[in-house]
Length: 51
Image (cartoon, rainbow, N blue to C red):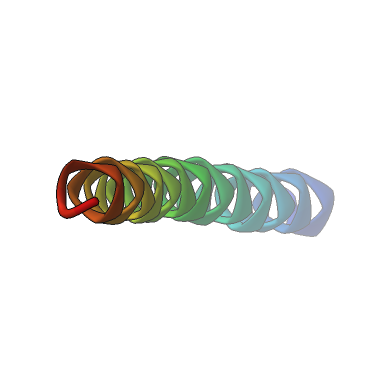
């Protein structure tokens, strides 16, 4: 294997790893936002019920 092929393979691995980390981060952010919306909704609804 030539040095250029090894370098290209290494760069590809780094790019794939970066994409995987980004996808995982987006998934986690989406889940956290969903939980925050649920909590806020429950607080608003329970505040209205106490009146």
